[in-house]
Amino acid sequence: MTPAADAAATAKPKKIGLTRAQMAWRAAQDIPDGSYVNLGIGMPELAALYVPDGRQVTYHTENGVLGFGEGPPKGEEDWDLVNAGKKAIGLLPGASIFHHADSFAMIRGGHIDLAILGAFQIAPNGDLANWRAGNEGIPAVGGAMDLVSGARQVWCITDHTTRAGEAKLMDACTYPLTGIGCVTRVYTDLAVIHVVEGRFHLKAIAEGITVEELQAKTASPLVVEGEIEVMAPPAL
Amino acid sequence: MTTPSAKATGVLKPVLSAQDALADIPDGATVLIGGFGGAGNPVELIHALIDQGARDLTIVNNNAGNGDVGLAALIRERRVAKIICSFPRAASAHAFTEEYQAGRIELETVPQGTLAERIRAGGAGVPAFYTRTSVGTPLAEGKEIRAFDGRDYVMEHAITGDYALVKCLRADRMGNLTYSKSARNFAPIMCMAAKCAVVQTVELVEPGAIDPETVVTPGIFTGRIVHTPDAVQEQVLFEQGARYP
Image (cartoon, rainbow over the protein chains, first blue to last red):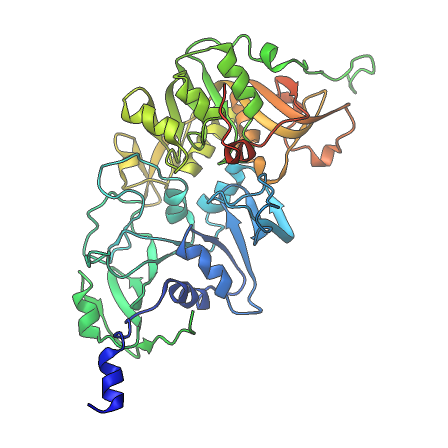
């Protein structure tokens, strides 16, 4: 064996696909300038870290704040100032505070331009299941149903498959729905998919995976038309 | 009368101890409780309600309590027959989880915006309304669906309360209120939707000390005032591992 071949044989195989931070980064590149945005807990809220410099984006949280930013360091939190995930936040210049009914009037009245959420299952008709897996446990929905039915656009950031390898993008959701016909885009570790007129349209794909391999992990046909971006996120 | 009589003063609201303010809450009452997560919970009033002893309560709150204080303690003491909320699940919601799994508490899960709007409607005299939220989901099952302009909407009924328990930052003697940041959350609409809103306030000032332009809850929605200058945030008690009683 040559030294190079030896190194290749012992090195771990390079993981295909984006990290969680890279998925958030990829979605963040598409957040429109001048938009009011609600980011769900987890990967969606990470997107705020990666919005390109100079873009105007105001963040909304369900519990009554527009224009929030990062919270104070640990130990200096003000527990009267939290986001929907109950994390301590800070107010940016120009922030505003309002009660819950006004906050949800922003959502339900179509004033929020974009909501980014997690997903258990997504169907090509835009149906989303992200609040309850099966029928076990305590039903807790929070603001998810309001966001998906009220925001002007709904994007999901999610792993392409479950940990067990089951498809999350499928012909029809089998889990209880959060909303019908609501999802417009999906950002996964392997692809960017737009949901248009009842079909999944492939727009971008991760390096190192073919369209055929991606289709095998997707339980609904992918429409592949025009130029497909090969995602090139920074190391995150 | 062309202008209000100079002889009348404005309506002043009773300033009471927590014990006196809650003394007449009967068994079976519906109580709207402000707060979201650890922000805005009227902890001192909830503890006074535990001491008061009313049972079979229907509680409306966004969550189902944290740790062993406040709403969680009320649930643990088995005073709550039913809870109406959007998000009863949390790592620290063990009191609710135990009661729910033992079948001792009824749960009505409501989307958060529908919950807020049902309370607002209750305060505004609107008996029911239609919303897009929850259409096509299990939470719309059994409810009236009606199409407007070709889209389906689900009918939701207003929520009113016998009492509301909320926390504010500053109250004047006429019951005008301002709040502290996101601790405002459900409090203004709960004050509107309850027959008697009991407000605990950190600061109590004379009429005129709050700029009318900045009043968030006008005094007409306030029933009774409890002055709690040393109120402790629920989140702080929770982090200390406090337990009540």
